[in-house]
Amino acid sequence: MERENMVKSVSRALDIVTIVSMEREGVGVTEIAKQMDINKSSVYRILTTLAQYGYIEQDQERGRYKLGYKFLEVSSKLLDSIDLRTEAKPFLQELESETNEVIHLVVYDQGEVVYIEKLEGNQTLRMHSKVGKRAPMHCTSVGKAILAFLPLNTVTSILERKGLPAHTNHTITDEESFLRELSEVKQKGYALDLEENEYGITCIAAPIFDHLGQVVAAVSISGATMRMTNERLTYLQERMVDIGKNISERLGYKTESVKDKSLF
Image (cartoon, rainbow, N blue to C red; front, side, top):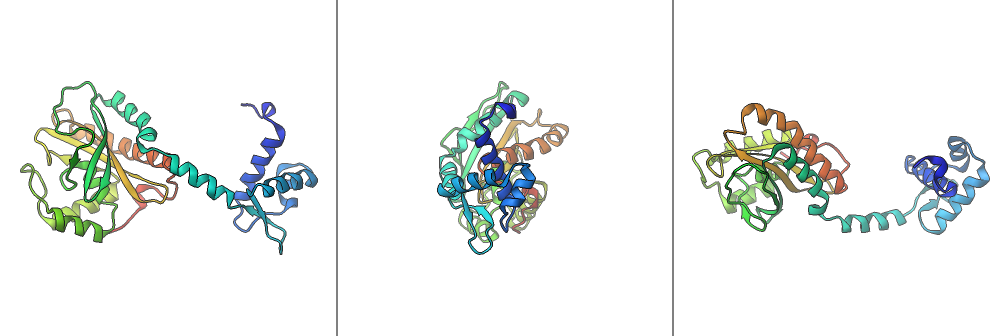
């Protein structure tokens, strides 16, 4: 919408909110008026109205304006209303359309992953996964993508309870080797399952973070090993990291990139 088609007072109020939000120590009427090139009386009237509704607060000693706690209330309601499956679905469909492979969305729960969404693609692939089913973390790409960003004491606890049982002869069953694998996952921002859970199936996954910066889920592409070549996996690496980041942003994640997080 062009600016001239907006309601001018609403547009100005939103501009003022943006300016105030950029100044941690608050901002004065004169500064706002100069930035917006409007008179101080107009700025004051808008600020007063916003303050009445709790969106703006004034420091009585310095006279500077800051964001009000009403924004916390509103953002809290927004975050509560966010549904992971709903927010992730367009990105999952995008991946399915691009790759024609099986796309999974999982969440972390009590030392395991739970499949909450599965898109089948149009390639022939028989997998044990289905929505609602649980799967181990140590031998799945989604599980490793989540484990790599959990606190070390949580990972250790999971390994003590669940162990590292072999699902194929490619499964990593040595704890030291597995922790090195998680360290690499954390550095790269994505995880691989090279026939570690099911023979003939290779997967690549990326973690998903919530608004608090905590890893809560993962997204993956699963395909026949003959199709998931090294060349294709190399291409998909950056794509998966971007998809994970995009879904995370839809959940309110804004702090740092997944590659910057370091818990080990």
